[in-house]
Structures are given as structure tokens and as C-alpha cells.
Image (cartoon, rainbow, N blue to C red; front, top):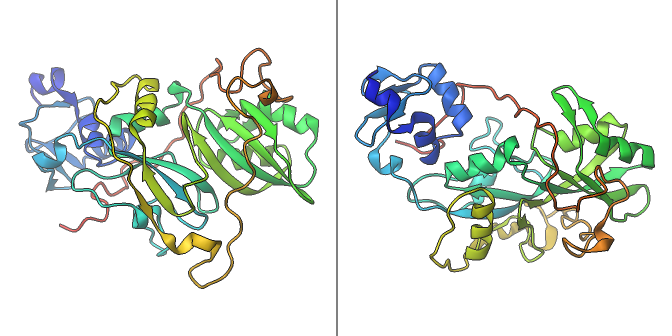
Length: 336
């Protein structure tokens, strides 16, 4: 590896992430596993590349067209329960990517994940840098969920959740909990958290002895899941929404105006499943607060009574969840 490739150009993992090959952490794993070559030599961690460099992943060349930065697109998908946030499932289960619009260049990168039994807002983008910033714990991006809990929840349990609970992968706490109604033995809560570890929200409730039987993401950063977007449908962010997100992540806003675009799977209309069975309600309760500055929005179980429910709060940042490295497929489902 030449001194030039070490000291100039863009980092290899950033270039491949921007091309939609995978996340930076995944690509670092591929580099460590010896799966990537640059100009015929095995790539090394920290290596930088030039536009003229020839890059191969698993022995297959990455085209210059793919390496060219694709046009940035960001969409929100209203994920139903029963779909996986993965490109291909060995068990043949439905995935969110089966219902998304095709791209000429790049690929959709999910911003965080929702598990099989969770629903709601899933952000996707073609911009690897934007996805990385939105997911990184250091950015302290708020994620808001509507959670249905079975059984009685005490004030002590709620205080414990905002003060912090110990999970197997480290401490965790909710920034805010707001009760929002319910019937019978089920109660709904809106919770805000600053990170996205695997099944973190469910595990936190389990840590205080409560059982979650519905979980729906309703907000990621500044992007809300609006009621007009039905389950199984997607829409692109409009220009004001996109620019608010970009500015919050320290990226340059766009000047071009975007026409509204939407689509998706209509089989969830009327809340019936593929076999005709009635689906459970996916909309959940409405938000308990009216706006960011409303006095009524204040929760009795706040972790910091001096700051509003939308304010990012200081504190110890948790390390990102460790992923299995060197095993995923950078080529997705495309046939070559």
C-alpha cells in the first residue's frame, strides 16, 4: 500500500458505505477479514482511496458508476408487524425491501432497525454518511415509541426506567415517559430514547418486570410518522423535512425542491392480512402532548425536570451495539 493511499483521498469504508455497500462498521469488518482489495492488494484498516483506484469486494469489482455518490434520497416507511429489516431472510419471511421503490444507483440503507414484532416509522436513505450520523450514539438523536404494556405499572417502575436500568450490554434509560391511556389490563406509554440497541425498549421494560405486547416507533429525530401514511406504505421526505434533518446532522441543506412521491403495499388497507384475516390496529394512541413548548407535555417521570421533552440531555454515552463482522453480503440481492 502506497503512502499516497494512506494519507490522501477518502477512507475506504466511507466510500463503500456511501455507495450503499453496507454500514461503515460492517465494511471495517470486511476489511479485517481480508474481503476487500484495492489495486490488487488486500485492503487495510484506515486505508484511503482515490477515484482512480480499483476496488474489489469478495473478488468482484465495484464499478465506478456505483462508487460515484448517488443522488441523496430519504424516505419513511410505515413498517407492519411481521416484516424483517433485512435484505434476504433464509427462512423466506417477508422483508421491508420487497416493498420499496427500485433505485438506478446505490441502495436503500435502513436507519436503525425494528424487530419482527415491532411496527411504525422506518427511515431509509441512499446516503451512507447521513445514515451513519443518524444512528451513531454520539449524535444523541431521539427515537420515540408508542408502547403498550400489559398489567399495572407503578410509579417506582417508571422512575426506575428514567433513572436507568442495567441491561446485559450496559446501562440504559428513557429520556421521557408519558402515559397515554389504555383499556382493560393494557396501558399505553410514549417513551423517548437516545440510542438504538437491539430490542432495547422491550428489554428495558422487562428489566423492571413489565411485559410489552405492542411496540411502534412514531418518531426518529425530527421525522414524525404522520397518520396519512398507512401501514405498508412509504413516502419520500419533502424538501423542508429533509433539510431539517440534514442541518440537525451537520450536513449542507439542499436547494432543489422535491415533488411529493409515495407508494407501497396496499394489502394492508382495511387491516386485512394476505389470507384475509383481520389485522390488529396499527395506529395506536395519539401523542399525549400538543407541541414542543406545551406545558401539558411535561411528564411526571422525567429524568431532568429542568428541560423540555424535546431537548437532548447530557450524560454518559453508551457504546454502539456490537455486530457480527465480516459475514454480511455487500451485494444485496442483485444478480450479476
